[in-house]
Length: 271
Ligand SMILES: [Zn+2]
Image (cartoon, rainbow, N blue to C red):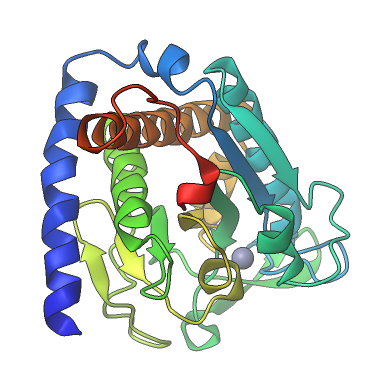
């Protein structure tokens, strides 16, 4: 099992070189035309009724997730990728319904914002109410599942997103591998903050490549404000969309050169 996994990881690394060449070579205008047929499911994590984490100033994680999910939809559509919004009304019935609604697309991304373990939080007064925060942890992170039906593509896309965001100046989280409290996550790609997280329903129940994206730590008082900045949200969405487009483009090139030179379109059933 371990050997198979390391083989898969090595394959992922070789495609990363291709990906880096595309990003560095400034060819990112090309994927818009080439991946025109691809469809991406963008999932807004949590719901109105169960909103996820609470920010340092009492904000609801779902509201943060929805804002960034909508910006990502816009950026993907600008690249002529089709988008299937999942849970934009905040009323989805179950976790399992998310991948079910995404069936048939080429890639699934679930948008979240991070908290930290309760042991690490301190109290402060924000506009007359007691809230909790930690300013010690920050940064974006990506998660994939070993149980993904297409682990290689999931890893490749996660690394592509992380690499693009870093190149744009966004800082990756460094605390998930060895948090002082909470569950350590095995590292898949340390530089780009990609980790394994095997028990997330939205990751292991999918039938397609899937990534969970944590945009940053909303318990961090400075990062919370940064995550609410509309310009920064737009830039982050731009980086994620570029990573996805580049990743799907490389996948298409691989498929076309391997077996179906007459049909370079990606087929969802292949996933
Ligand atoms: Zn969340």
